[in-house]
Length: 227
Image (cartoon, rainbow, N blue to C red; front, top):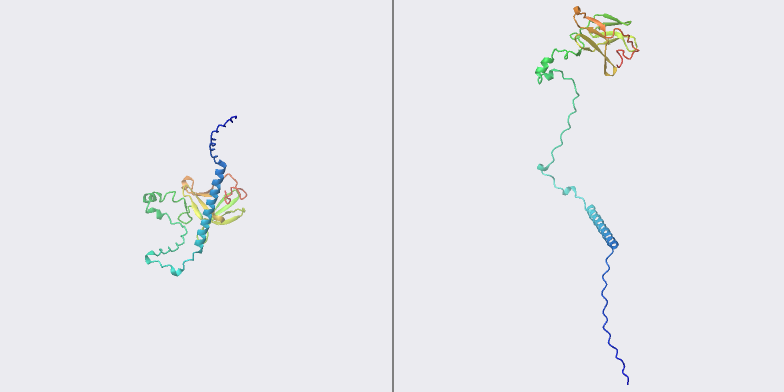
């Protein structure tokens, strides 16, 4: 009898080693974080709306339930409205004297003080006793009106003779000029001035500032013009 060859028992199979877990891809992480952020933002918005709705639904406090303030807690009274500002006006040089005694003393009587003054009998040095002065065919007359106003009759902006009151004296020595008021707040200076020097020195007379020039009313440099 033949012998069957006995099969050798096979070695037990070794189980396969476990495969490592596949790492989460970065794209999936970003998607997860984005979804989580949106959910959190939505939660915050819903909570804010809920709180705002609760505040709006709170009934207002009735005036009767508000306790009056104690006398010590009352707000101070409102200040009375300020008085309207006083319009600026000329106060005179004497207001400066109390603080600037030495300067006021040096200034008094100086040419600076006498540079511009109201035209009065005490300040006008020129001869206004119906005295005429001729210049380039124009005869100007210096006189006083019935009420004592110092006047000059001379050529105006139209070239015709007109009477003008003297408003201010301008200067005192060695010559004195005269200012005449014009519309618009202007003061025009006559080109005829008074020589205040003594007669022995050639003064005490009227003279023209531009004796050799013919400047009539058509000239831009006429005394009534803006130049």
